[in-house]
Length: 78
Image 1 (cartoon, rainbow, N blue to C red):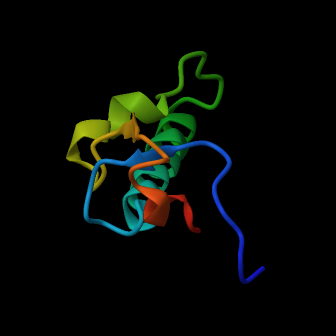
Image 2: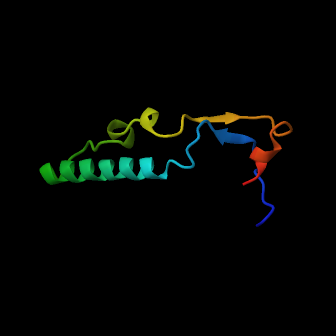
Image 3: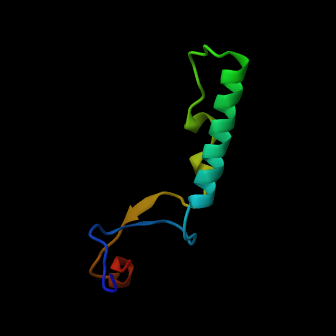
């Protein structure tokens, strides 16, 4: 797809290319906490949530923002 383009003019507020590494670390941390909770008490009713073990504000991107597709046509390219 040499000429593909975005359909929605939204982009991340950052210079980082991706949050992949941050998400991998957060999910590893979550899986570790869940395993520890189940190992300690196999019938545990309350397991940790992803938001409890990671903070989205410490990740590389700071959210997303709409932009004017007419003024910033280069951002519409994938």
